[in-house]
Amino acid sequence: MKKYYLEVYTRPTCSDCQDLKKFLQNYRIPHKEFDLVKQPSKEKDLIKITGNRIVPALIFSSPSRFGVRRKSVSFVGFERNKDEIKQLLNLDSK
Image 1 (cartoon, helix red, strand yellow):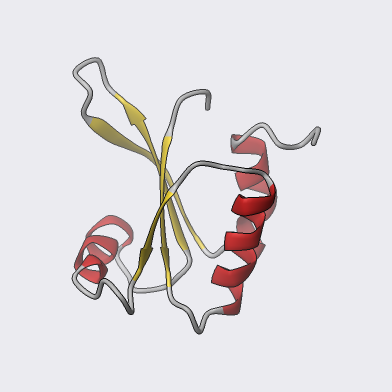
Image 2 (tube, helix red, strand yellow):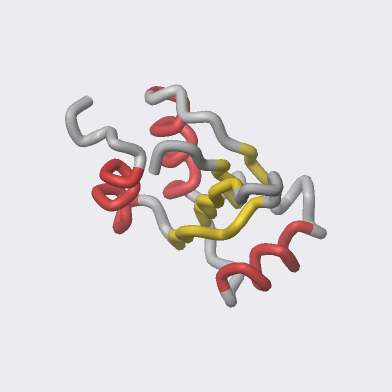
């Protein structure tokens, strides 16, 4: 995926979320983070997108011709999806 917009839904008590944040910081991956404790209204968005409240959730969207974001790929959980996320971000060689 070359051009994408990444949204990440997290909670501060989630160790998998903390690992994801370190990963994104280490690779300098641009993203928008929603802390569901600080932004509880975003939990409704998370449920609408993924069908559940499980964090971390990563939502990769791609821009359309008209600048509207389209949901492309979503992942629930970081550690179990780490290899797929790295492949999607073309980080296998890094």
